[in-house]
Amino acid sequence: MKVSNSLIYEKVTQLGFDQIGIVKAQKLDKEAKQLEEWLNKNYNGEMHYMERYFDLRTDPTLLLPGCKSIIVLSLNYDQPKVKFKPNSPKISKYAVGKDYHKVIKDKSKQLIAYMRNLYGDIQIRGFVDSGPVMERSWAEKAGIGWNGKNTLNIHPKRGSYYFLCCILTDLEFEYTQSIKDHCGTCKRCIEACPTSAIHQDGYLLDAAKCISYLTIELKTKIPEEFRPKMETWAFGCDICQEVCPWNRFSKPTRVEEFAPNPDLINLSMSDWLEISDETWNKVSVDSPIKRAGKENFQRNIRFIV
Image (cartoon, rainbow, N blue to C red; front, side, top):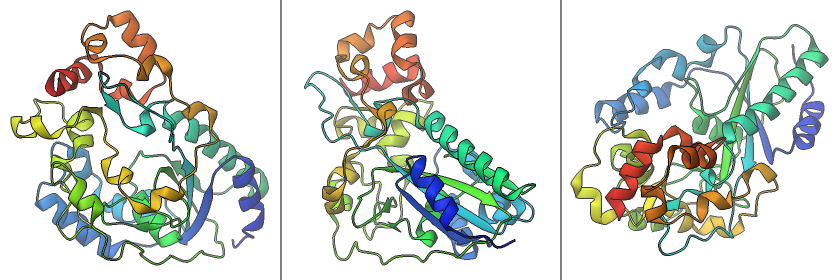
């Protein structure tokens, strides 16, 4: 069933999303080949979940039988005024407020309920940085932005500080178009990355070298070679976004839940190392840092002190 885009666009705006793009669901042949090569180079490090459900990851019609369209949504999280004290560890902007999974899932569930009310018994399923969905590939195809040399999705008027959400459905729409890559000859993200995680030509990331991976995904000991390169990042890293010229157009988020938690950003290195279980539970509740766990977060602090 082919339906009008206008009602969906109106609801998406009402829910507070910043962008919407809709693309035809199809097998990702080129991306499947790239993913296979990436995995063969062990660029996924210990993220073994990237090796699972390969067919579902590269073909949405297998993930949701009858899938015809993918709705891609973006939600800005930028916090330009977040400043960490010299004796405090750095935490990626996306993690200084409440867990985005919960915030976006709530919004996407409202959209799905609205669409079911409009169109009846439809096949529909939402994903927020979960499940075998290649969000950035679909975001690029839907025109949310282009995937830049740092491999992040970038919009020429919004920058790259935004989350992505994909909704798979058996409805058909008028599809949006991709936009031009505007990275040009710029190599600021490549040159700024302290661990050389981004390939010299860009568009390829060795995640096993990325500070975000080392501080979040890696559950074993951080290799010693990275000790002088961490630049006091304890959870995630924003360097490749901070130097990106397109982020000068990024605006502060309007989402109250993403506002910085003062209990989180004001703790010093020593505070984190001495933190009690009770304080950790208070600070990490509804926060992305909970994913790391107290022991791994303190491991990160000890590594960068």
